[in-house]
Amino acid sequence: MAMAIDNAFEVDFSSYSTTTTTTTTITDDDPACTWNDWGSPVVDWDSLSSERDEFQDLIESMMDDGTGLELTRVGHETSNSVSTDTMVADEETNGEDFKGLRLVHLLMAAAEALTGANKSRELARVILVRLKELVSPNDGTNMERLAAYFTEALQGLLEGSGGGHGKHLITNGPQHHRDQHHQTDMLAAFQLLQDMSPYVKFGHFTANQAILEAVTHDRRIHIVDYDIMEGIQWASLMQALVSRKDGPPTPHLRITALSRSSSGRRSIGTIQETGRRLVAFAASIGQPFSFHQCRLDSDETFRPSAVKLVRGEALVINCMLHLPHFSYRAPDSVASFLSGAKTLNPRLVTLVEEEVGPIGDGGFVGRFMDSLHHYSAVYDSLEAGFPMQSRARALVERVFIGPRIAGSLARIYRTREEEESCPWSEWLAAVGFKPVNISFANHCQAKLLLGLFNDGYRVEELANNRLVLGWKSRRFLSASIWTSPDSDL
Image (cartoon, rainbow, N blue to C red; front, side, top):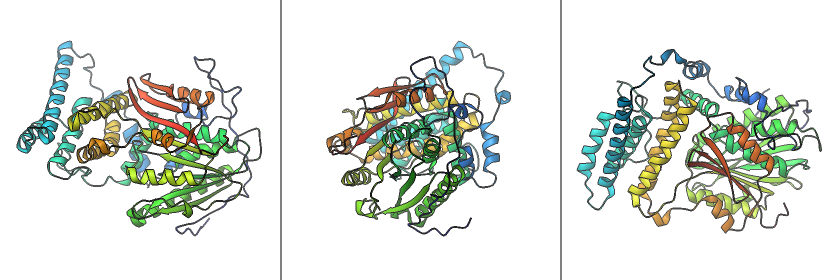
C-alpha cells in the first residue's frame, strides 16, 4: 500500500480489527513469579524461548538484502572453530592473568601521562605504541581486546581527536572499515546483541509493563518517545495490547517520535522509515495506530508546544538513554526534554539509563579505571552470551562497544568533575516527579527474562520504583517509573 509521508506524517489504522491473541505458560523456580493472577504480560515467553525471536520479522524488515546471510554466517558459528586445546594448563592461565594485569598497568600509566601532575605526552605516546604491539580488537582474551579499544581511545585523546569512531583503530589486517559502519553490520550486530544479552529487552519490557498497567482502561494512548531508534520497543507493546483478554477493546496507540535537526535529513528519513515499519506491523496484528514526528530545535531543545495533544489520551513520556546501541545524548538535551515533559502533565514517565560508578575524587585516572572496570564486566557478559562465537562477539564489540568506549573517555577527558550530571532518576525526583512503584508482575518479568540468559545477570529493586540490571557485582542499566506531581496514579 503506497503512503505519502512528510515530516509530520500520520497514518491511522483504527479500522483494523483485533484478531491476535497470545498465551503464556511459564514456570519458574520461584512459585510466586507466575502470571496466573497478574493479567497479560508484555512478553510471550514461549516465543522468546524458541529459536526465533518474536520480533525478528520486524527486525528483518529493516535489513537490506544480504544482511540475513551475514547474520546467519556470523551468528551461527559452531564449535568446529574451537581449538582442541580446551584444557589449558595452569601455567598458561597464570600467564594470561599476568598479561592482563600488565595491560591494566600500562593503560593506567598512559592515562596518568596524559593528565597527571607529571603530564608527559611523549611518555603517553611511547606507552601507547607498546600497547598497540601487545593487543588487537579482533584476537586474544577479553582483556586484550578491551585494552585495544581503550588504547585507541587514549590515542584519540593524545592526538586531539577524542570521540572519533575508529580513526585510530588497531588492526592486523591490511583493510579495515575505519569510518562509519555499514548499515548491514549495524543491523546484524543489533540482532546479535538482543538475542544474546538482556540489555535491550530489559529496558523495553520493564517500561512497557509499567505502561500497560497504567493504561488498563484507556481507549487512547499517546507515547512521546525521546529516542525511538529502530522502534523495536513498541512492537512488544502492540502485541501485548491486542492480546489483552479483559477490559475495553484494543486502544488506539499514537506515538510521537522526536527527530533532531542537527542530523538533518538523515535523522528525519530514519525516523520516517521507523514509522513506516511500525505502521505496517500494527496493521498486520490489528492494532489501531498512528505515528507523528516532533522536531527538536537546532540545539536539541524540546518545545512542549510542538507536541500535538488530544483530549482523552493517556500521555506517556518514554526516555531511553545510552543503551549499548544508542547514540549519546547531551545532558542539556535530556534536561530540556524531561523538564518540558513535566509541563505536559503525563500519566507516566518511563526512564532507562546507564548506571555509572561513583565519580569520587580520582580525577581522570580514577574515572578512567572505573570505565575500564565497567566495560570489562560488559565484555565478560558478552562472552557468556557468545561462548563459542568469537566473530559474532567481535562484531558487537566493533560496532557498539568500541565507539562507546571512545566517546565515554572523550567526555571524561573534557568534563570537569563538578560539571558531571547526577543520575537522571535523581534529577526527576529533584524537579518534583513522583515515583511509581514497580509492580510485583514487572519485577517477576525481569527475573524471568534474565533466566533466559547466563546466570551472571541479576536484577535488584531500588527505592520501590527502580529496577537495576547488573552483571555479578556491576550495575549496567536501571529502569525507573515516574508520574507528574499532580497525578493521582
